[in-house]
Image 1 (cartoon, rainbow, N blue to C red):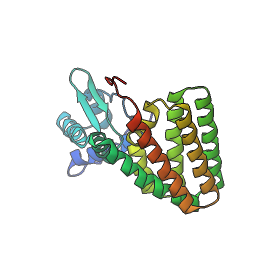
Image 2: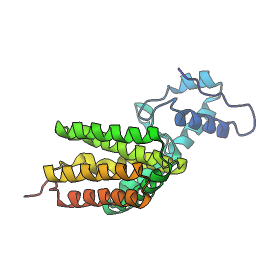
Image 3: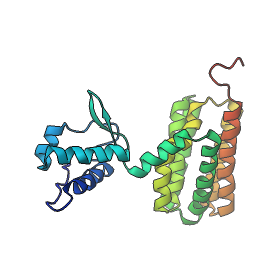
Image 4: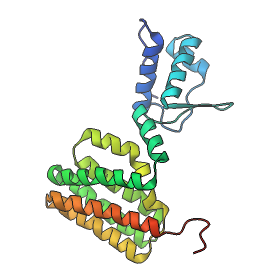
Length: 236
């Protein structure tokens, strides 16, 4: 098991401990959703006082990385401050605003991917398309939604922009949740699949404008589909 870096004995030990624990979380030492070790175990492992540890953990709770659950311990809420802030903001935003943000990110990423993608990245996109087709053929929409999320993240990674990849990864759940959460009728599902094929073809051809257009059309199709879908409590 990966060990947490022990803070150096210097001024502002609590601040050093915050940095050490934050780095441990960001590197996956404590995965999101897991409960961190109990207080006494951390005190013994890190060689710090109880007040220093509590101050550091309180700071991480304030930053949104940790969540203290009364009577149950402290859990990892997010992998970074950026993730915590952005996901919380996206979750509170209107769906149209989320889709507009997705359009901006994916259009730019898709156009850039057409210019920068590697052969390995192109092959991965083709594989994900095949996986999505197989999931749809088996009418497994949960699996299709998961593959779709992986596909769009792969497109963004192919852009070669590390900061864009980071932002999109943090917002990935909020940006793609509508695809997996609503049933697609046959015609809509085929249109959705065709636009994805068109996007990959454009990326393969290094057609920047074509890739941007296909990415924008995918989001618009999702928007129309969601608007037309009945909600719980509808009489339709």
